[in-house]
Length: 515
Ligand code: FAD
Image (cartoon, rainbow, N blue to C red; front, side, top):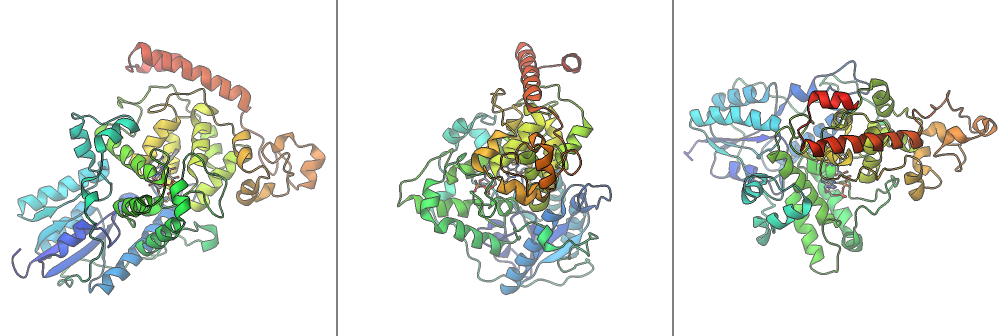
């Protein structure tokens, strides 16, 4: 690059210094570096009608997690002689303005497969190429490049984990050490006429702050991610024996899995660095293997990224060629009861409270509530449940969330619709005393363990002693599980038969006739 030249590093995900090829390239050979994050109104517009605090698209937990991650990266950049420049507005417009004002010669950002970013990035890239600006946009959010895998598979996404594994093999970068350390960065150039701010607080963004005790225990940022990773892999035996779906979904004081998903979502932790740490441990001990091992979980992540990237309309039933067409019910009351933890099934409601308060639940807890909402009991559309998760999870991830909702609703990938999670006996297996329920639903804290999973069966005298009258202090069940699940199985059987007959091409009218 010409001397006196400037690079712009556009942070979106990838909120880290370690293993950040875009940042590394941006800093090479440039005299000035502008590290930018744009606060996007698409995600931040506040919604006074939302049933829990936050914006239309994001609960307060995730907004806070993002701000904490930005503060952390700003601190790290300052230690390297730079700082984070925070701007607000529609990102492509903001970016194009900055590129012009700062006379940028090189633009670097991590490649993103999400449709929203694909559109955004196309606008910015078009401007850059017309203006003669060099663009560097490497794949570093996932282990593999989804488009490479699709290409190797003849232009189609592999639709099973096994076929994905066969095609993927070893990641190309895995044989040499990842560059994880940047020791200094070029200074920030002159900031003429662009409105820059420090990382805003939650209040400055227009949200009411909430006491920390009422929010997620997981704090954002790369420093926290690396600390959490170090702690998770310190116990080498735990890593070596990790086996999913084994593990207790009700363990909340010390979760049974790593809780690294929020850090992977924002790229505070590099999945490639995580992968290498696991390989280093595996070298010396006998260990479990994919799909159940910890490394296998990272590969699930890449699997869903690849299918999502190669499947038009992946996030909807209509027009999605890998999704079964099922005549889901439109029932806003049942949906609201599920979303607001009022189903009357304590196991389900406790999980939904954990989602709302923490923005994270164990994988099998997610299975339980997703199955319950869709093919298990309520027969509500998976897209509605997906929306609730998308807003409230701190690890909310477009590819993984949609992929897992397709899976759990038996719309794609998994088809054994007769296997239903009982909202009563499944949780009891792990937590017979109901400690998880007592914690997240304190209204049931004094209910004897015999009734904690089915409080509506407790005699009146017991309900009075437990200070919890069913139907008054805690709801009666919204459905009878036995009859609802039987009805759901019948509807699934009919829908599957029709899908098979029509080879997936089910018309609007066919679906109406099934309702
Ligand atoms: P660990 O078991 O420690 O696994 C390590 C990492 O592997 C995770 O952090 C995650 O990045 C990845 N991983 C684990 N399980 C899966 C999986 N089934 N699919 C893809 N990647 C996986 N995960 C998200 O990150 N974002 C989501 O929006 C999301 N939505 C989900 C929705 C439903 C209905 C279900 C059933 C699961 C969803 N998951 C989602 C997958 C999974 O539940 C979480 O990734 C996992 O519970 C996160 O906890 P952990 O970091 O302790 O996982």
